[in-house]
Image 1 (cartoon, rainbow, N blue to C red):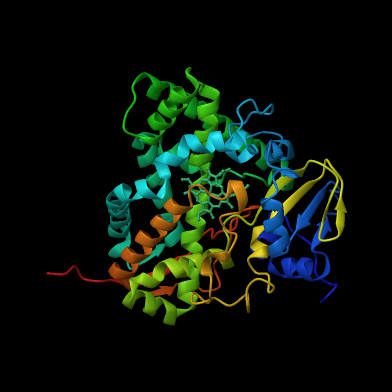
Image 2: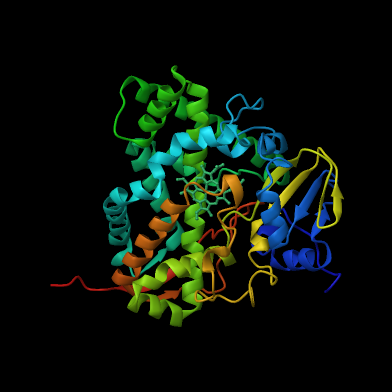
Length: 407
Ligand code: HEM
């Protein structure tokens, strides 16, 4: 292993390709103390990451992001309203239970037709152009429109959602002061917006996720708790957009780089879910999440004092050769293709995963049926978003032919 690897991650520039750093960590320093941030430790091997994620009594989510970032998803510094993502069992499960019924697998069947309509409309918008930026024209708008429909958000508010599409969940300590200010402004605006939305739905409930969450909270607690409902809504709204966008872009790029797999999926759409899982393993939208260390402990023989933070490197765990044979290879046929940690592990594992998988399946079924001869316009031009914690394409210029409509 080369000692010459420059450890430049987490950072905005290191986000372009952190994989050689991960390889170094896994091989040489699997529990790595960041030199200029001695209270932060990076955990990079699959089994260790999974272990930390599954032991919330030692590795706590409670306020971990808010304390690292200085503010939470709605811009609060005091953490008055804790999101499910920022709380530990047993409090956590009550918070998660407020949103789970609206996006549980059994409910998703009903969403399938209108998600397909959104997908078809987005493809209608590009089909005759022969070329597009897949990110701007498809992968960014699809999850945003899905969220708008679930929350029954009016079309006029779309520009606000676009602003929130790059909310930085965990990486604020690694962005510039100017970017931190922008992120805080956006989080505050998200909080104000969700306050208005929740108050409006409390007055005039409808058939949407916001009204359902409010109903469930009032049924459970007796009184309406704006801060509690707003907190859970904020993490669903913010958590469902960029993550899914990055999954769609990452999967398409891998298919374009592996045209034989793309053709196989075109001939047999039943392969698409496997391809999506393998794409998420290789190009995980959430590269890492933080946890606060509650008591003196040890991970893989390294002592970590109480009061520290650990960063669980899902992106590294998913490329650990101890867990995946030939880990850098795109192989949708690998056994246990869902074994990756791209949706996390333990109590916080992604509550929106079934919805993200559904969006991905419908998107690729329709894209491959309606566009052929898909190719990259400029294979050297696939930059990633400059996020210290998310991974996803900033643009993906593609060319194609529209399949003529039947009849
Ligand atoms: C490909 C798309 C997605 C990826 C890669 C992803 C990834 C993740 C990960 C890694 C976690 C665990 C965080 C932790 O352990 O601290 C998580 C949690 C969460 N995700 Fe997702 N997510 C995706 C899509 C979605 C969608 C579509 C929604 C909303 C409908 C959503 C809502 C949430 C929420 C609310 C949590 C917190 C769960 C809890 O704390 O119990 N995610 N997600």
